[in-house]
Length: 167
Image (cartoon, rainbow, N blue to C red; front, top):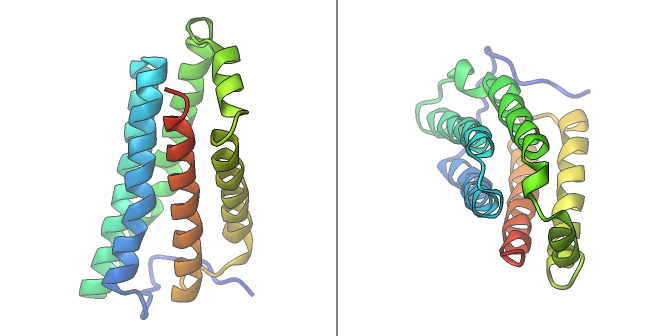
């Protein structure tokens, strides 16, 4: 049965290398959001992206503390469940508010052309896997964290490369 991380669990096998690998998707998400910000020119979108980036960085810091100090700073872990969704919601609202200023046909045409289509498909598949992982994997196990971080890194790198094709 899946064991959920909680404030009393201190993952024993988390390493500094795992924490640093966790930073890869955060960095590429940040680069992607800068790219999206350039495309859409929206302050609200950038605020939402900043909140998502902040949540990701806090999770990286949590893993670094777990790996080096063997302490569970629970607030750094649990904040992802609130800050990330708020950031994503702000980004969606920004897209709705700014929809008249966006040339969706140009974006869709570029996104559906190669090579961007390939990168977006791989990114979407990886994010679908991340959703599955959230329901079936024990996030206190180091092996599962490695799997999640590798899949998430591939997703974020692919989204970034795909977004670069749009500008």
